[in-house]
Image 1 (cartoon, rainbow, N blue to C red):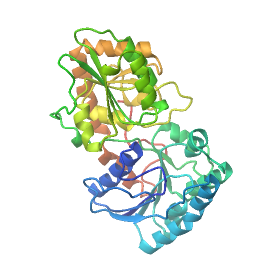
Image 2 (image 1 turned 135 degrees about the vertical axis):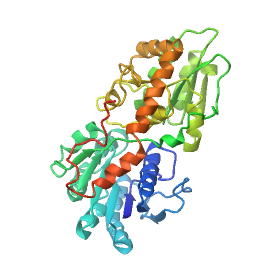
Image 3 (image 1 turned 180 degrees about the vertical axis):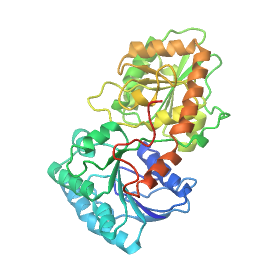
Image 4 (image 1 turned 135 degrees about the horizontal axis):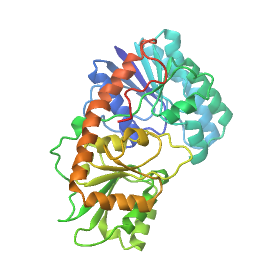
Length: 397
């Protein structure tokens, strides 16, 4: 099967370190391992292909000039003509798979016109995100482009039930939405991984992996960390990743006298993550209360595969992905007191840590691999193969 994977999003460097970058890499790699011949069409191809993607054929999509936001949006719309021409030049394809971006509709319309299955992966309500967190000049134009690409797609793949609900608000998408959560490659996390950042003797390491942004709840994590008792077996905080919240977090930790107990690694390559997870005694996903939580957090799937005991907020997909007291411990979102109490409980109960980590790892291997995600995606090339709104695998375990 010859597949065109299209990513026209300016915010996704497909060979980068961001979560969205890892998602592209893992889906492409998993499709290839299923025997497909995948060609990657992307706006941002800078960097070297990671292991397993060295032989993928690459096609650069037209660049969008920097500068005035109105002109950039117009240029992104106009670029659809060039994207369509490139696909027509390089085709035909047995499947066209696109990661939804604000202004792109050419790939899905090309697929529909050529008779190839057209699958659209939707990771977030991008119009609302752009308007709230960045700058969106022509919202009506973005909504017209969304209706256009949703109408052209044969199937829309939502990473969470919340994204699926968002898509069902569009008449053009109704009845063709499938929930396909994220996954993990468990083989990246062997049980004998060597800690690359071990703490001092007796330290109990609380770890976080991800981009340091407000919606990840790091403010709550620091507050909870400050509530933990100090003693002969001090807690240590290991924060893996970088982002705009780092200066404020560091200042907060300094003000609380906790800076020496915290290690910031900065941005790391994916191949460094297993060793860093092996350096943790417990991993956290301390999301705050959010009006809309539509994420399918890659970090939690990696925590599971690494066999770590996990403490996460009881919110969105996490409330289904982790079974409380069986594959993780769930806390009310934004509740620093509850988070601190749960971390202290885990420090004092090695048997509980081992049981939770073992069960989480087994669940990741059994139900949440990228191979299973790729199989689900490829099954949708047959339009009647799967009913809409069915998940790739139950997330209730």
